[in-house]
Length: 415
Image (tube, rainbow, N blue to C red):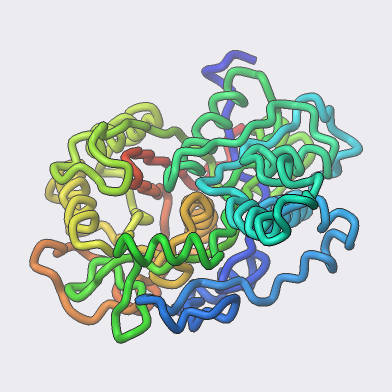
C-alpha cells in the first residue's frame, strides 16, 4: 500500500485529568463545564502569589501498576503507562494478535519527571550526597515516559519522546501519522504527559509572573477581558493512532480520522507567541493544505487559549487571518479553562476532546468567561456546552515559540 493511500484513524482514548479519569468521566465533565482547578493540596502555597492548580487527586498508581513498578517510574511516566493501557483497552486492541514490531509509542512531554528529579536532588543534598538513589538518572530521563510504555506493553516499533513545550503532543501526533503513512508502523500510542506540580517548579513560575492570581488565588479564564494567565496542571492523554486497513480488519471502533498537521517556529520567544501570528497563520494553512481541507470546511476549533492577554489576542488574530469572514461563525473553545495548563498533556487532552466532540455532536464550553475583550471578539462558546454536528475540527497549539495545528475529521466509512 502506498504512502498516499495509507490513512490514519483514532481507535482508542486514554485520559487522566483534573476533571476525570477515563474518557467517560472526562467527557461528562467537559459537557457540564466542570472545573478541575482548586486549592493546591500537594504542598504549602501560603507564600505563593498563585495558590491553585489542576491536581489529579483520584489517581492511585499502586492500584494500576503495583508497588514494584511504581518505584521505577516518576509520576509523569506512571500517567503515561496507565493512560496507554486505557487507550489500548478502549481500542479493543489485543496486543498478542498484532506484530509488536509495528506497534510503538510517540509521547510528548515538556518537563517530564523534572519534579521528581528535583526532589531527589534535595534529598541527596540534605544527606551530603552520601546516599544516592540508583534510579535517579533513568527515572528522570524525558524518554522514560515513552520508554516505560514500550516496556510495559512490549512494543518494539518506533518509540520516541517529543519535547517541544506546549506543542509536544501536536508534534508527536504529526510525526506518528507520518510514520504510519510511510508504512513504518501500523499502530502508535500517541499523547502527552506532565507532572509539574512540585514546589520548586511552581515557585519559579510564580516568580516569573507566569500563573494566574485572579480573585486572590487563580482562575483560568481564556479570552475573558480580565484574564491574567494560565493555571498550572498535571495529567495525560493518550490516543491510539492506527492505519485504517489495520483497524478495519479487526473491526476496531473509530472515533475520527487524523487528516494532517502543520508545524512552524516563531524564532521569537520561548514563552510567548509572536504578536503578529505570522508563523501560526502559516502552520494553520499548512495543516489545512496537507489535510486536503479548505478553511470553509472547518466546523470547530479547539483553541490553545492560554489566557494571557497577548497570546489570546494573537490566537484570535490568527483565526481571523486564516478563516476570513467565517471566523466569527466557527465555535472556538478552550478546555484549558477546565483542565488547566498542563504543557504537553494539554495538546493530548485537546485531541481527545475533539474526537469526543465529533462522536458526541457537542462543542465543549470555555468556562469562567464573564467579560468580553474587544480584541477577542469571536465565538468562544462561553460557559455552556453546545450541541453541534461536527465533521471537521482543528486543534491549535501556539506556545513556547512552536506552532502546531492538527486537523481531525469524522470517519466517513470508506476504506
